[in-house]
Image 1 (cartoon, one colour):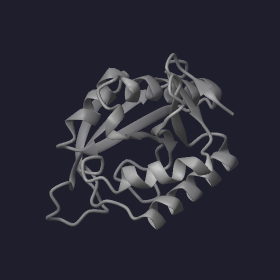
Image 2 (tube, one colour):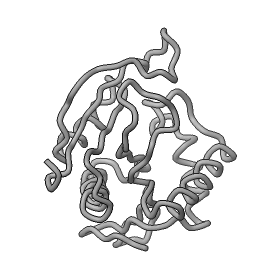
Image 3 (cartoon, helix red, strand yellow):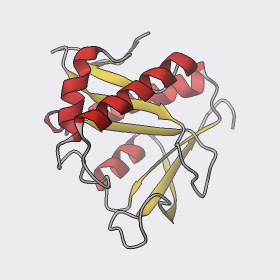
Image 4 (cartoon, one colour):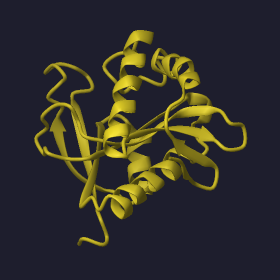
Length: 178
């Protein structure tokens, strides 16, 4: 199953995506708003879990391919966080793109498609996004796709003194449900 935008394809993962995904997850620039970089094994484990969710639910974190080059550029999609948050239960939208593809408008383009799939195809009532308070690039994407800034919270998976602990929550409701 593929979902197309003007310049991108949101699709199931391929074996060939694993190496560039692992390289992204090992890049300190790409991972600067996450607690740590990831090993190849951790990246592969994430892909395995994502593939299973996509197979089970029909939605999840899709691999994203640039149409013009065929390059794997990262992932965008929908996810149920695997831990309790102050506003659980929720479905979140998330993205991670290789830095070679930053600044091209790809994250909002793919994220708009993921919202459309969640709202139209799966009748989700609300989708949230959250990130470290310092992650202004992701907050700009959240605003570009029509999400509303709501509240700050301390991420429960990060230690009290962790510099990324303070997070910001954004929400968007399905226009057909409101």
